[in-house]
Image (tube, rainbow, N blue to C red; front, side, top):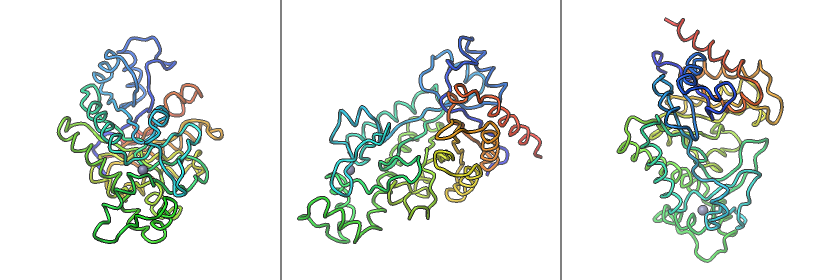
Length: 346
Ligand SMILES: [Zn+2]
């Protein structure tokens, strides 16, 4: 914890097209944010004028970056689709189109995109998203898929365990998947986490080279180590401790309604993540009525509790929902309270 560090009060998906700031000059957009204590935003597309005005006003600007997912890539690159333990292709799950994280051409493509993004002097940092093995997790009882068993994943696993034991060559895919899961689960889990962490490490080396002052953040699946039989390692391949070697800021996606958890859970998970990683943790909390209504009171309380638990920052997902669902007031009241608390501390 860094008591002197100002609290980062951040809006994900901010845009100068949102109702309260639509059509006003860039300096006034920045002023509108300043007055509400918003000192960081995630943006998609914004003009140089708006970005310049925000920077001038001390608002930090971050970008999200999608790694191993995407509808158009899923459609145009069938060879990047994940393969599940029964040997079949993993189908899309609603809006979610997962991709295998071990395709070398995809990994290199994403590294090039990362370099371009983090080198952009108009932004302060990049948050890695969908940086995991493919699963749609943000719902009740997510399917516990075992993936990926494509040729590349099997080849890389075979190389990773070479010298320890032989991976059979003569089994069909489903048979081999079963053999690995039944006989060598620990090494399989280790392999998965290592593959995710390695990409992050390579990105970090790029950051160190091209833009050492920029931040690398990560949006993580909000599962504890022991939850759902260790699914954060076994299914997702996110080892928070390993990732902490290369990531500056963790943002667990503590969307409590989507995950069917209570309103105190985001703060609890935030504290747990600080202990687990020893890093700054800026939880990202949900603002939208999904799958059920999120009351003004509950939204305000979740932002407050999460900000307090973090001690350094909180991100609201998303600014667009605050706008559409008319929730600016409770969210901005929470920001104001947090700033007041921080300032009154000795
Ligand atoms: Zn694969």
